[in-house]
Length: 575
Ligand code: SIN
Image (cartoon, helix red, strand yellow):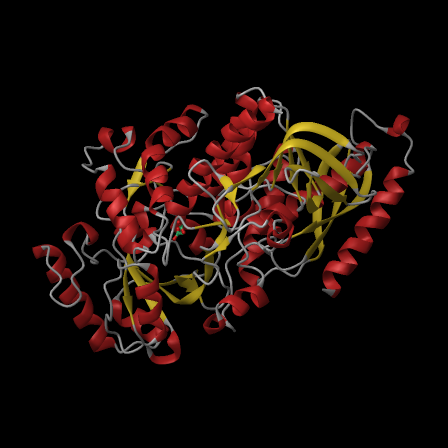
């Protein structure tokens, strides 16, 4: 709180100072000198100073930061990238996007000062457009692109200083069955099997019409993002899925940062206006009960109204609002979260006046494998590519590829409520996302089982026995202990070095939210659509039922984002 307040105060002062800078002081090149910049990282404020010598960024010093010790190499890496590019417009590092974005924001502020540019966001006054999208994560950007493609004028409002939301940290991939990418790899799948897996994984609590919509639209949606430049060529397995259907970039790179970059480029190319630092305060209702715009608070300027013919809510879930999580799900009190700070559930009070139904709010998912020291999620794809889970005693205790609720519960039942995710070099080489965990210092690495047992405290004899037994199951394709299927045991764990990371479950996805129909229209408590109001992505409830399958979060945001954008543009044309 205090940190945030100090940050806001500093920003305000910076904005006021910048506002006093006459336009004519803007330069084509950086003026030599030392400039300071601030950004918001994962742990709080990042403060940097930038030395400009002969109009080039010569050196950067970190003056203050509250990131974890594990993030230091990433800060250094981002600084090197900016120096090399001589610009803050560089890619964030997947697996450390919040820290990366904090460094980028701080560098941008300093560089803008060196150019004599105003560092204030552009200030906005009353606006009128066709479609307003609230939230610039994967759902909001998908909605904006589709609405703009249909000819609508679109403004995206994002409360944070950077775009992407939780999509930035999404890793495992995006699900779809009967996709062109599966076909190219000879993977046999069917929409019916995909539907059944989702319903079974969700304990049949899902809204089946939403599931059907997700399943039917996934293949064309994957083609849609691929046409924009997304690489979905690596198709892997996630828990609860019968076959490989989780699509991600070549080599097993994280999907999230890649997708955000692709969607953002497309949105901007289609003329979508994205306003960061513009926080929606309320959705406005006309006298006849329709959504007609939003009230916006902007950093450094007065609140304003953006009138719109249709409003799309794409604000994400509430997994970072720990008091809201425990009010709906008291058993999760005290759990940490892997959510970005903006996932605070702001939208729910806005839709009360429309009589909107909040659906399955108590359905909150934990991710089983979150690094105990740093609350960083280790993607389920690591298990999908062959990793196992061992308890402190060195024994397996669950089918590691079961659904997240089952695996989370099993880990919590072990000594100290944690487990070790264990894998070998072959698994590591199969998934580039693991390189980031290594860079972050999350992995215990050892050339043999004896030393990994020593470093983790696992019983050496039991560990060796467990690995030998698992490798036996892997070679005959039958797991007599926990019934992991042969496709879920792709490789023996036999190639040194070996890796382990201690994990425990943390809050991951809030599966409940605003009830929508398969046209992404917000439904009221009587099941009637609210005119002009749409919602998509994690802010909605019903698609995932009691438990979401890995890879369906990203599918959900893009499929329903597109639908919301299309429907909102049709609504706007009607008005
Ligand atoms: C993961 O990569 O394990 C998370 C992806 C998801 O929740 O779909």
